[in-house]
Image (tube, rainbow over all chains, first blue to last red; front, side, top):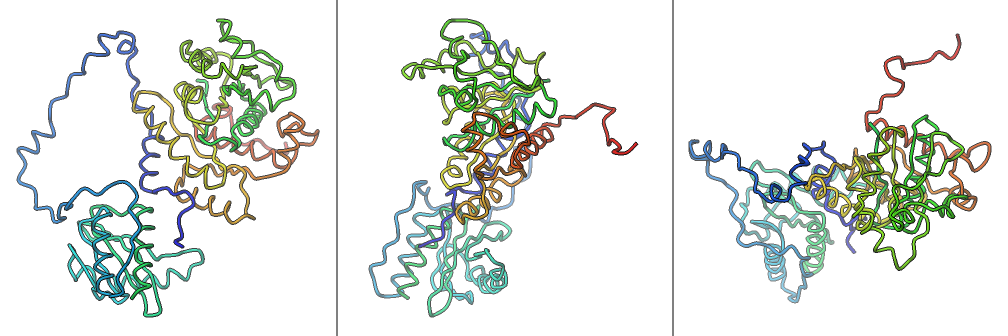
Amino acid sequence: MTARSVSWTDPASVAQLLARASAPRRAAVPTFALANASSAARPMPRPAPVVAAVVAEAPAPRAITIPPPTRIKSQFPAPKLVQTSDNPSDCLDALLAWTLDHQRCTGAFIADENGLTLAAHGISEAHVSLVGPLLSALVSVRMIPGIDATAGALWLGNSMMSWVESRNDRGGFCLGTLGSEPLSSRAFDQLKEALEVTVRRL
Amino acid sequence: MTLSIAFTSLKGGVGKTTTALNCAYAFARRGTRTLLVDTDPQGAIGLSLDGVSERAGLAASLAQGQDLPEVVKTRLPELQIMPMGYVDTLAIDDLSKCARDNDILRRIVDRSQAEYDAVLFDTPAGLGGMTRLALESVESVVAVAQCEPLALRSLPRLLDLLAQLRDAGDACSLLGVVCNMSSFKDPVVLASLEELWALYRDSVFDTAIPRDSTFLQASRAGVPLGLLSRRAPAVAAVFDSLAAEIEQRLGVQEGGEDDGPIRLVD
């Protein structure tokens, strides 16, 4: 059983809603625009495209290092991962394919607790190796009562690496993704469940 | 300028009416001239207060095409109540439509400018009908959240509606989230509390309303907590604290320029 949040709520979306729902009041809409149907229906004049002009005159931007998503992922809940093979290598490949198919990411990886890559797509081994010191550092964090620390996200400078961790009697394993933003709490739960299903077969 | 505040929740049974009623009483005790308006077609305020349920109110005024109903005076000169009155069950849908056509809640806010310092709206559960009308009419919204999973899961829907109303030009903004029926004994309640604080951070009022049997006693007697007995029960103080916090968040200055510390001993 995965430890799911009580609210089933994505913290990032709550933060956005709070900003929209609590921000200082905007300028009031002039009443004549509401009272007069013809003027209300009339489109407001567009401001001059200042930003567009500036962009046109600016030097060419640096190349963006985040690779574009290979496909637009569905926003519906991902189907549960079902592992049918007893071959560990097949199981890892299935987990990687499932992750790439159903999570908002441009790359994914599976590593052991030392940061050794077991399977990866769209992410360098150098980045995956970060997992080793990262998980070691989190061991002390887990000593704090009530802190799970088996999932997280790390800003790499131009992309966000998100990961979940699970253990069996062979040690710890880590499933991670690379994308432009951290995964939602629901996605973390899905990843963790899929990793646990896989780890049981390793 | 008169404060206008709606106490709202998508989920029912979270304590909106209890919070609105006892906050109104606390505001009045602080000297704030307060009008408590019942916008719930079930007449929740009327059902909570002995002596109010038989009074005509908003519903009758709307049905008869009259102007605003007469307010009910209370033993506190600073607190007056505008009840909903009886609403035929089959006419509940018509009520909110009629209220919208007459723009009655906004008119209540407008008319209150001279007579009251604060207008508090108790709203029905849900985000449509009278609730939406109330949200469109007020400046501030207090989201009431019971400390349990369902209430937490429904809270983003209220925020989403507020965001959409603001995008459409309405003035309403979230003043804060108040935790209701909190307890440190039940692990699920505790987990809900922790998650509420983690997700909504500064939006959560410091004052949490505890689960306490005194609320049932007040409900049975049909009175605000502060009037349950000559010596008000200790739990009534949480609403003094919440009212103070609401005023603080709204930047209400008490007493004007001359206000300040008062010596206990001269």
